[in-house]
Amino acid sequence: QSAEGPFQLPVNTPVHYGGTGQEQWAWALCDAPLVAFALVKFGLGHERPVRAAIDHLTHLQRQNGWPCVVSKELGKFRGPGRKDDPCPYASLVMLKLLSQTEGSDSPAARSGAETLLTLWQESLARHPYMFFMGTDFRKLKSPLVWYDLLHVLDVLTHFPWLRKDSRLLEMVSLLRNKADQEGRFKIESVWTAWKDWEFGQKNAPSRWLTLTAWRILQRMDASPLENG
Image 1 (tube, one colour):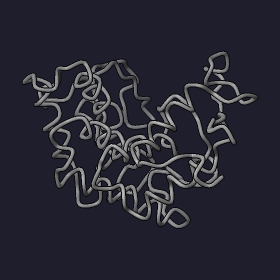
Image 2 (tube, one colour):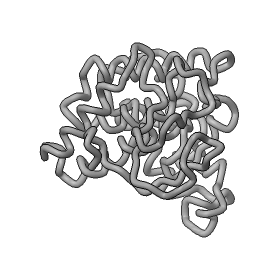
Image 3 (cartoon, rainbow, N blue to C red):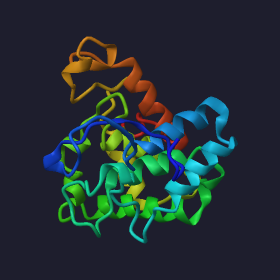
Image 4 (cartoon, rainbow, N blue to C red):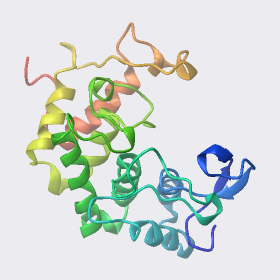
């Protein structure tokens, strides 16, 4: 655990990206929330070190979501975007973390959710840090490690106070319309590292993807068969 609070991972940032080129222990706002999320899911969310990590990360939020932030060990590294922009992925994984804590109905969670939904609403014009919400974003893929439709829906549908938001309903409708007549879903984009896995095949419906999609739809009290 860093002196600041977040838990660290071994990181090697090249010199031309503002790093040292050497492996060191550090954290970034695109990974530290996921470490804390895992610890919360293991039942450690009330432990003092985990609370310290969550509190520090939560307070990094700005009015427009969470920015690109790294620990002091990584120097001036910052992703390819304007420093005043929110980082969509950092905002997504912070919401993922908060959805599993008592902060799930906090001002921070509400502000972060509004950031992602506004980016969806303005997806043709705004692409902060090169996180697009276009054709590739809309393709169904697994596991939930990218900034994509399924991952965003899996996170946002954990917040009951969002479930009537028209922007979220639009995204859910897009997912629902991808189901076949039996309510199953096919992978639409595969990273070759997982091509041998059940969720890495395009030629047949994926059981894991279908489970993930139905969990989302059931949170919204929707059915993928509603539209026929």
